[in-house]
Image (cartoon, rainbow over all chains, first blue to last red; front, side, top):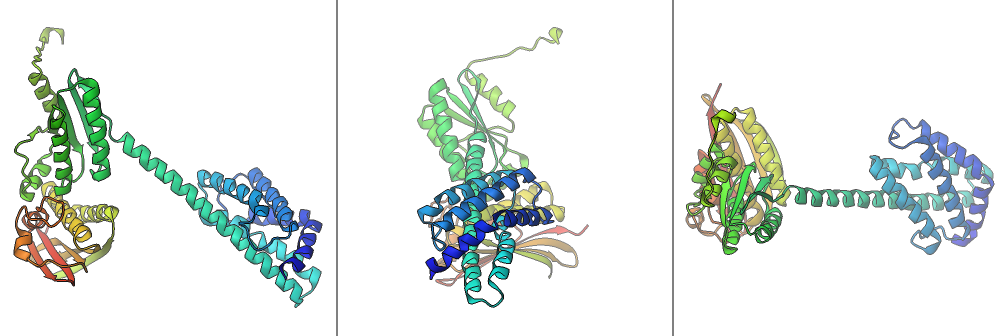
Length: 288
Length: 137
């Protein structure tokens, strides 16, 4: 049955291609909920490209399975379309609607030609409807995959961005920690910190937790692991940026940090680190 | 004690703990808790939410705004349907943990909050209720 109706299907479309295209574009442009991010020119381009590929693919006879090679070019085009639209900020339903909106002009062409109540016509409508649904879903899926890829990339970037290790003086490195300290973050901090200690031959590492909003037992545990690892490398760790409320919470939680050197501010920690390295400073008031 | 408003959050992964923490933070700020108390409540919520996730295999938290004639407070309920705690007294001891943690969460949360209540049935689940009060203003 598939192949029998497929032949008139593609003939119908090739005959009225221009007509369908014009109406389709008109419908899309008049849709009030259409996202403003997609320029009219690109909408026209992708619409005519879609119709061209659509006609090509159904001419080859397969209207059931869009995973088949006849549809490869179409899948490729849709993947590209949803990727561009995702980066333009369209919603997934917007992108799927692009395809679903073809139904109206297409079916309008089918019915008068074959007459109302014609079983062949309704079979064709049903088949085309299923086909367009599949294509629409494919677009939405691709759209989501593109979005997810963007999110994953940003997450990775954020992770790397948020853990810089800074050399503040000869033999002193500092890590300003910002955000929640979970296992993944701790792992990255530890890796970059230990590497930097080796690279710079530092003896003192300052971990600043001013930007860590909550210090609970898990955060404390992560911090202590980092301190232990630093010690194994032969360096000393100073934890700075302990706010008064954090200090009280740590005490109430019962976390024992007696063997860790802590300072209220990064400046105090740097001063301590320099003093340990034998540095001393004088302030010459006359030059101020 | 009257419950003025409440919100419920499921705890199924690490990110949910962050959400619980943010909701608690919002409510504590609304109630004008001091910065120290805000931090204490958020930390307690963080500990208990992590217990729900790691020991209770997930569950839910209910954040309530409660009032009494003289005072107003935040009540946090953490419920799970996990294995339960066989020895409650032991679980509240500092340094005792069945997991990889420090074993301070439950006892710590008790010290950080004003009221603390825990019910647990083996193979049925655990329910922890904590409250912190502040003067009405």
